[in-house]
Length: 148
Image (spheres, rainbow, N blue to C red):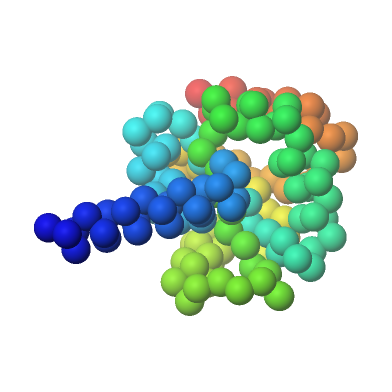
């Protein structure tokens, strides 16, 4: 009983740490799909090279870190960060998951942004777009509206 309680606490701590460390972005695709299904929301997958890809860094700075995007995403999307860093440590499981998903969805460059249904079906693919967070939110709204 005591061991079960400790494992439960450790599990909750690690989930909380992952969420805190990455904001609203999840890194576990299956957990994100379950959340999307439970909340009836589409997924936004960000295939990124967060520590080396200039366009990825711009997208994070100009869009994903802005409050207008965060507010929109919190109510409309489940966010998934699928990172391919050069200098940041990742577990072998995360690396394998990210490679498999990049292969499954035909990702050929970074950043690649995919909008998926809660079931994991591809709705649309996009990437970096100039204009800032508000313009990007409008772009995403258009994608979501056309998918309905």
